[in-house]
Image 1 (cartoon, helix red, strand yellow):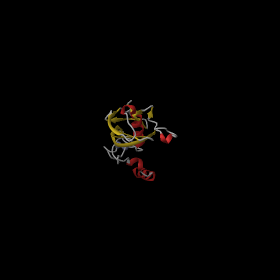
Image 2 (image 1 turned 30 degrees about the horizontal axis):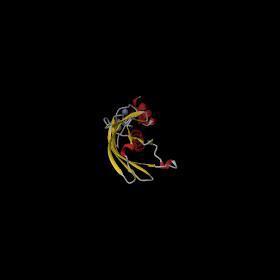
Image 3 (image 1 turned 180 degrees about the horizontal axis):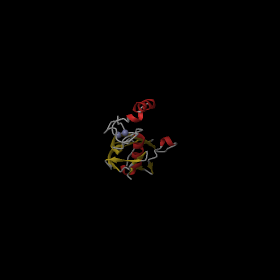
Image 4 (image 1 turned 90 degrees about the vertical axis):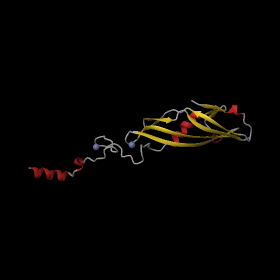
Length: 167
Ligand SMILES: [Zn+2]
Ligand SMILES: [Zn+2]
């Protein structure tokens, strides 16, 4: 878990600093499958801007997730470019004026990054947008071996006719 002590920046109203931070990430679970973030730890740029009313926190990083394709289970990669922003009021009067990632001037970078990755995920992670998936009849990968099972699709009336012919 990576956190950042905002106190050590000693910011006064009107100050802004940018820092390179290395954030440790946890694997993500999605539909029972595990997706591994790379690189891990990921290098991110943290910008902290302080005004008298509060602090604006911005975080930018690029990360890829590796795990099985939703359709064919082969390796899939998802690239994400995250540009995040949170606000912490000096004297918060409601939940909107407070970020859940700051506690006692400590910024929880791992939790912020993990939640943001989870929110940025598409419904399905695919090896490619037009992945054909697995054959529902025999389970073979339709990307490698495109095929149909013609026999099962025959109209039963034709099957009966063929039987008559054979007799
Ligand atoms: Zn696939
Ligand atoms: Zn098949």
